[in-house]
Length: 166
Image (cartoon, one colour):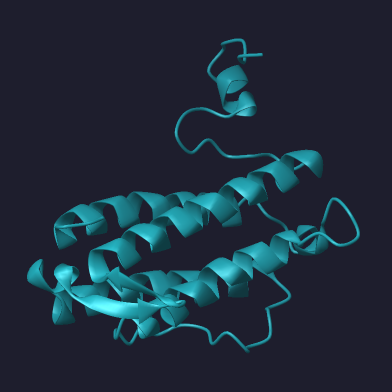
């Protein structure tokens, strides 16, 4: 749970930039890729990340600009990326204007439970990381280049003149 807005903002900036690295490794054609018939597509997962920011934060009483849950998923990476970036930037702006460290201790009704706002921010970040990980697996299975997030990806090791780890 976050107890400091500055800690969250620092973490969010890194995680948001990492999500954008993944988005920027997608192609418009790749948005419809899924591994099995009932599976989620890369586009669905990317869009889910974009719409969750304003949706989850609205439940915590913060108005974040971004796509609505019912809004149609864009058909191209540029529009997906723009929607995600808008929501991510708005989140940081609205937090700076409306919340402080004390506010993180307040509780909200969230998905049938009571969460402190600091916990909501933690879950928002973890939710993003979880689905971004799903996306990188789908990308690898689809033959797309996967960017390194917490260290070099296979292709990045090779570009540095080193053997990738097995």
